Image 1 (cartoon, rainbow over the protein chains, first blue to last red):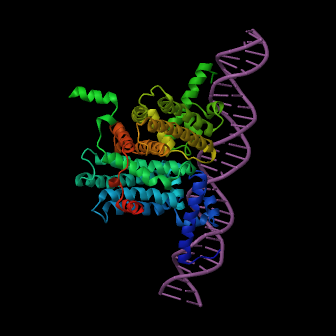
Image 2 (image 1 turned 120 degrees about the vertical axis):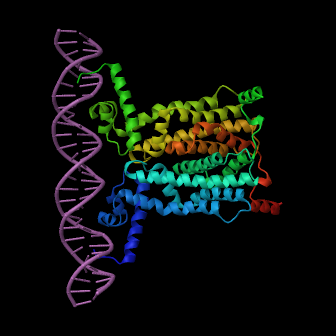
Image 3 (image 1 turned 90 degrees about the vertical axis):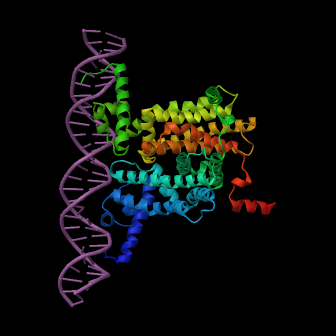
Amino acid sequence: MARRTKEEAQETRTRILDAAEVVFHDKGVANSSLEEIAAEADLTRGAIYWHFKDKAELFDAMMQRVALPVEDILERAGGGRCDLEPLQVLRRATADVLLRTARDTRVQRVFDIAYHKCEYVGDAAGVRERHIASQSECLKTIESAMRACVESGALPKTVNPREAAIGALSLVSGLIANWVLAPKSFSLERHAESLVDIWFRGLATAPTAAMECPAKAIVKRLRK
Amino acid sequence: MARRTKEEAQETRTRILDAAEVVFHDKGVANSSLEEIAAEADLTRGAIYWHFKDKAELFDAMMQRVALPVEDILERAGGGRCDLEPLQVLRRATADVLLRTARDTRVQRVFDIAYHKCEYVGDAAGVRERHIASQSECLKTIESAMRACVESGALPKTVNPREAAIGALSLVSGLIANWVLAPKSFSLERHAESLVDIWFRGLATAPTAAMECPAKAIVKRLRK
DNA sequence: TAATTTACATACAGACATGTATGTATGTCA
DNA sequence: TGACATACATACATGTCTGTATGTAAATTA
């Protein structure tokens, strides 16, 4: 077949990435052959090997293509525009990640691949490292936002910013992971805001003896 | 080599399962060959094929071996012994799953495999179904416990039991998934109870206008 | 104690998937 | 307009894994 122009080559690259998304999602990363991906894109393996070194690099490129926009949401929320009510900004950003996931098919597919259809080992070790690093950075962003809320008095002093961030991040990633695994089990879109609200109410409410486990309360009283 | 007695054969089976755990955790399920697993157990593939039909069945057996005790924790807490304070029982059970994970190396390995080192597709489709089914049942248990708390007045009427259960499950599974991915990023053992408490405080606290996003509050006021 | 079954080890054939080498027609540029 | 680089397609050699078939020595049973 004839050689394509540079723009057409870029389109070919995009088609390969799109095909990889579909095939990876369908059969899992390890069980997908480059042959299948090429066929899905109406190409041959030659095209894939021209644009990417191997399957790992293709997978990598596919992930980064959607990882950036999602990270941007948190980035903008954390750094961003509104120092007036950092708590509300954080809540909104958190809920937005869920809502964006609930609405964007591509984001869903990629989250599904990331959570349930790839293995973070061996060839994809780089991906694992990057996943951890990106999560760690995300954690830092949320943590500093939480800290700001505590210092501004929007959250009580009893809140541990890092702990609050860990919980928020885990809640969100857990919700996404569980939902993409079985989207029919509940409506992420309907419950997103409410679920986030529950977490932030928990943070905003100072712990009371009544809430504690009786045994612990007794221990505490004895210590006094 | 010589034929073993029945008890020795059972021990061989166990050794295979142990080896599978280690190798799967090391190289991922898809990238592990039965040859490697056999070598890890000081056996040959013949032994594996004698005890298990194929890799999928081996993986399956390995998962079920640890899945049962974990499910039991929730089962006992949900059905169980204490109708006096269902809320405390539920909180304790939730925290216990986290603490057990934080302390038991085997549970950690298997969670790590389940969350980050296997693909829920193709051969393992049965595993995926079972994962979904088990999670759905787990959800039902938590949900009915939540409902009981609402009806007994331990939680406010405004709490949607299913939503509360979804959040709790997602928080726990998200925490476990994130922690086994990077155990050094935070101490699960130290924060487990506190994190669970935050969630339950969020449930116990009725929503107030002050907590809501200003825009939403305004919309609400306009509707009145 | 002889026959049979069990619990493996060994040997073999076939199926893929990968990576690379090579072919080729067309843009691109001097 | 020719020479070279580009963007693929095609062909091939290789390795690896799987499943199964077969071998075998000891445990079990009658």
